[in-house]
Length: 571
Image (cartoon, rainbow, N blue to C red; front, side, top):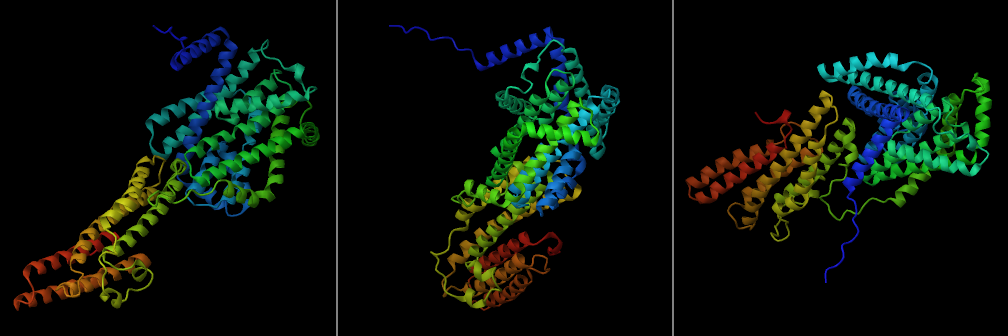
């Protein structure tokens, strides 16, 4: 019996095409909606260009400035606010802070304070749009900026190309604001919310949700504020609902941090959680006190000379006021909030010791955090390599790195079954970490200064030399184990070799800038060259064993040479 065919289900691609076709038809039919959509698209495109240009022009300066600011909460709040006001992107500052925390550069409380300041700084965008964007013919200034920016970004290189990108971004922002303003002026018979001016309090949470949804979809609270400010200025939106939408935009802006936290470690997720908690608490307080805050805005507006009907400027003042109130409420709670998040989002267990600890995807967003993450992971790789090299010369790492090695330890009896295979430990603990290290290095595409590029290259080469040294240690260990018996003709020479390599490793681990790291090994090699010649001459040593010892001395020399900083390499 043949089963009846099931209902036809449209594919996702078909639904997307139908939605695109319907949207296109609507925009073609309504010129006012098309103008609004074009303005919004230009504004978001301009924000993207502006963020990229700022990252390129800062050359790490912005990163270092924010890093230095997180040492004190009040200073972090001030610098976070000022930086966000300058770059007009709280998302950029938020992702920077997540990168710092993920790379282990700053503590969580300092990064939380920086996020609080970024929330306050983002309110300057509303002031700029309300004070200039809605009153000045920005298209008049946008065209020359677009022309210079487009031509410059094609013809120029380096920081000058970054400056051209900055001009292009500003030009797109100006043009987008002008299109949005024109679209709302044309849309006289469109959406009108005069009936919900505030008498029905239950509508306010709906407007908050609208602000959240709009910001999540557009990935920019500035874009949401631009829409409501333009609608407010054209009379399409009443004042109190506009305030509620601004509250929702404040919540929606946390989506950037939440998305960034998906690829971050536990530290980055904690900061994203702090951002969400702060914005939710601030929004709840602002919504509960909406009418008193609106009344306070009227009072403050009168004191600073705002006209009675200057609704866009009053909304900007409200935006600043409730974010400032949120900081006052949450500032004393930063240590407790950090502790709570550390308990709720603990560090993952270290079941896999080869797993990278600092190479979060968020660290790739900015030059300084990428370099810092590489440096910290390189130190972990170096420590593992040194411990493995101690096993290669059959000496405990505590007796080699912890303090100057003792010859009695080198001469002690050797239990050949107690020492792990260098090759097995390399594949279990070194190679996986090295693979993550190299993959992370290949993914770095943030604009780098010459110093940063040189530092990355040095870390890259250092990691390769560490692995090279471990491979030499693997060959050396096999020979040392074969001749570990006290009766072996090579045991005395091997003890001298192990002691010399241990002295070199001790200097590298504790004073890497010390020259002549391989001096002890070179002295041992010269001594045993003469000793071997004498023993061979008097037939006290087999030539086969003599060649093995010379090969072991050579492997030990190559091991230390691979670890020696280039400035102190032997000529």
